[in-house]
Picture 1: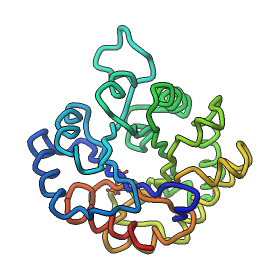
Picture 2: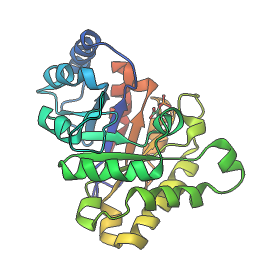
Picture 3: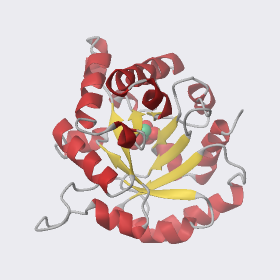
Length: 257
Ligand code: PEP
């Protein structure tokens, strides 16, 4: 973390979990244990249908609501899709884009990721852009090449002032939902590499202002060490974000001086 130059952001990714009723219950439980003073921003990304319930339930808690996906067109004949303007109008602040599960199960390519990033920025929200390598790619030694490519593609055509509004989440695929975490050194090495890529593209000022999270089995036990790394500016958290007590423990780890 480096709070002098950029925000620390702890974001939960609920994936396809919890009903609207369970969303309300989670928020009520969280409210009791959430620290009043927060040195990090807290975001909860929920399924589309739960967004109105989440906005109601988390108001007064300084918890921003995020979506887990978006479609890049503004409107039209795209049955079943949801636009960035629709999310913005509801009060959504963040949108996860390019999560490995969307890349793997729904054919989301780097080109699609870029279109979605543009749409989210144009609507005035913050994209949380997910990048990460598979175990095979790590073992082949191509992690940084692949991630550099993912970053360059995701940010193609985006001007510096908008890149500052982007959050990047480094999520090694082999660590998501597996209980295997990248070591703090591995996480920092890649987050630092991402910052270097942004520096080459946009200069030092932009690079140092971008929040770069780590995601992949972050939990109350490993959060403190991961978040103590200079280039790890928060976490994108799946499993542990579904339980209020675990989520708060991670927020507390990010609250340390
Ligand atoms: C995620 O889905 O973004 C994630 C990091 O999941 P988990 O924390 O469960 O590994």
